Length: 505
Image (cartoon, rainbow, N blue to C red; front, side):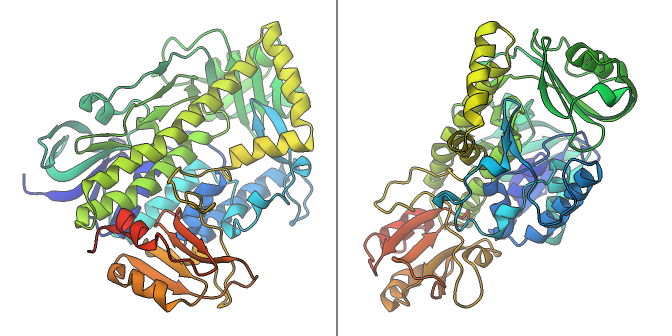
């Protein structure tokens, strides 16, 4: 054993790659190991939420997202789902348990939708595209990714982790499991993983079929389950509520998909080819703590749930951007290991909310009379402007914030993407992965307070284009506001700098 790394990341999906990129920006030496020899192109999430898009925007990857989104929109329009006007918003903004949210019923003038920045425009980006973008970025950052290499064992001795791989052994200061819902890292480390057993069988696929003329587009509830068709050609989803599959490991066949789609839709389709297919359930579980010694978890390794609403990808990316800068700071010696306690404290409540959100959707999909009555009530509610706006604020992620304490309303929230007088926006100043002290009042006193942290916190002095009371914000590398003040107030800045970026006394 002669190879050593600061961090070994198990799993080269979007979460593992995002974490690796964040760690590398923070100066850590990272090895990513992935048991699959090639990227998994199985159909997965088809969209991202606002915090995910903003995370990519802050790191300069927004053009990549928009390129992928434009290609997706063109495919949807070519399929006749929306008019061809290039500037027209897609008519559907999302769904809750398959109940559609119409974009024209959402009040986008609400304050929470203001100052989200250009990142909020990137929504229709599939998980495979996200993974490809991150793989390219990892290559640009010089991160080593070993594919076709399985993690088999590890030993955490309190000072580091000896990681045994199929092709040898490496030593790391930290190990992070980003290896999915059946995480080897989680199982070997012995994390508690409580939750609820599944009660549904779902299929998602991209297929070729005949006889599909009788399938209705969008989400459809029938007497035997739920199915979707579209919006891109050949994309289908079925939900049967009579228990989980007997075996989730065998390959999904055309016959299995055909039988499920026929049973749920009542349409005698014939599936002639399968391009991508997966089974899923509503198994919902979450580890009680995201860290155990020198082993941490992120993404599906830490929490599993049904895929309804596509929250899993977003939840995992959020884990990665929260953990990455913190673990890098600990690796550099700039922060105490206690900083990692804030990872579970901040991310566990978000994960718990997603689990509840997906459980609620399954409850609305059940076929008994009481559940159908509740679904009718929710359908009527989501047909109103207030109802659809309230749900969309949840699924879009604009309500996301951490409970960090402090008196200012912005503390714990994602920093508003303020337009600055120098022609830039706040989000454009995070490409190097460092924190920002945004000085809108041109305050020499603020800059003097922050000076000891100049190696970790970059000061940006600029006037806002639109006048405002806000005079300054301390923004963590993950975009979260750690401190904010109005009218030249300086109280609490030094304490916030010490709390998040190390004591400089």
